[in-house]
Length: 79
Length: 403
Image (cartoon, rainbow over all chains, first blue to last red; front, top):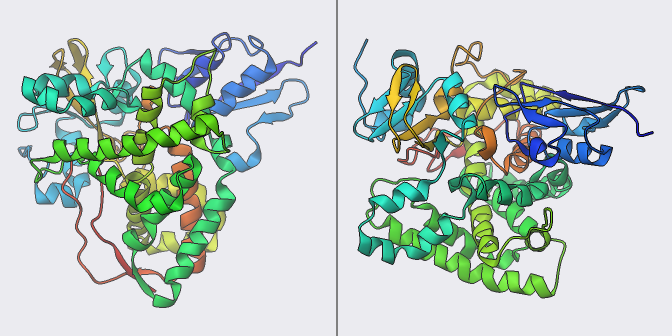
């Protein structure tokens, strides 16, 4: 069983670059403000979700283990 | 209500764009400028709205550029047109999406983070060269070198070629920064571009046969779902990266230093609290960033703040006005390096948000950290400061400092 993820978007940082949506279209989509929103945190393998978060030029996406609350991205030195 | 004068290159607008564009933002936020022949968009909400809406607003600068040219000029400038049409900044989806995704991995915050130790080292070397003099022309002796060295090393351009490339890059840039006093700027721009292409072509060829740990090699190998960059796209990308890596970061450093010197309490605060450097750089970007405005073209008739824009109309998206919009930022005219959150639009917004932003941030953070620790007594010399006469760039000609 893959672990469940919690994905959070910081709307003060999100600029709607769309990179997460292109990387993981089953996880993210544009909301009506043209910022990113999560539709399904388990919509892609963990590696793809992390790639989407790392691809964000604004470090707007936080990925955590939903059960242990361990933060998988970003590391502290990127914030 | 006072009348708005429409000369975007008037001396008082160049010296202080914030007062001028601020007045427009408050009195006529979507303003038709008959002299420039386009719309000025100045409120934060509208700026962000337009930049997010690439369905209605195009970035294809070359399309309108080509339309304005006489047929004989189109032939003469065909190289320029052909390559600039492939520059990410001037393209719309789907081309933009494809190339942006291929490039993005090299410029993510995670990817550029590994350059930080080297950036730090370069900064210390540059400061060591000037420290004993107790004064410098900040742009020529510091702010100009840092981004050039960083992007050149990252791309894999040998140090001995840097100066030459800088010259060509400057020539190429003439067409964008609209220096009104240069009638032959298109031709000079094309000549600069030709030199850059001639330079990068063999370099790309070499990396194909002998891959290295550099960005050119990474771009050659960049693959997204089986898709690669073509030779022309690679060349166009090399020229845009070297070009974009030059002037803007220089201006971030110079404008930022002026802002901190003019708000000395904030400089002291940074000196005493180096951990504030990240929010400080964001605030410097907001307060007096390197790019005052960007362009869009209406793809169809569209309404904004009760004004009707027609298909093909051009828009000046005034980032400098949005970044001081009191509807978005409290005390927008104050420099507050602790401001958080700070959703400024200095890097733009939407799908065209600056690709190099993570690298520019990193360079800015390390530069202001080093300056505030190593030269805490730095101050502005008593010399007049003049800005280049351009609509887009907020660029000082010289910045003399002493310590």
